[in-house]
Image (cartoon, rainbow, N blue to C red; front, side, top):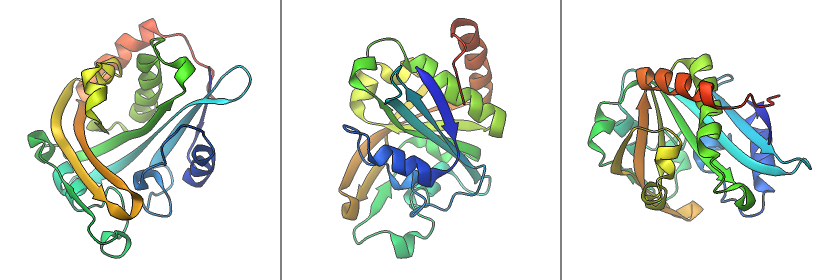
Length: 212
């Protein structure tokens, strides 16, 4: 797999919209929903030998030094630049993960993960996360990196394969009726010191990817 990286989220939406079998990208990475300044987000695309898209993922960073992840999620500011005017009627988010109240500072969100069926079951999650985590650490040195994932990713151990060390249920009970989104996701996360150790271990094991 050959990897590409970019920061233009409009370009990313153009790419992901045309991927067959991938769910629509959430507002967190949509420039028509979220206000993300230059240098505060990036995406990674993986292509097979024929140049077809086989993988995508994206990360963004938020300054939560004066708030908490719980407040960030429940205010819907993680989805919309102006929730009062952009969120549709009935939109809401409840975060019941206790540790989310303690997650603050420079916080990166890791999401929109998609891997084509023929690449699954090949032990790629640690490689894919290693690339994303390494870039996030180099760019932002975040205090935390978190993701919001469905129960089946927890049950199958895929969250573990990505390197996340902590998990709590009901991290984001999100309802966005206007977008057909009704989710009850787990909160998974890793701290800055844990991230440094994970990257050191991953670098010794992983092949050097082609990244452009």
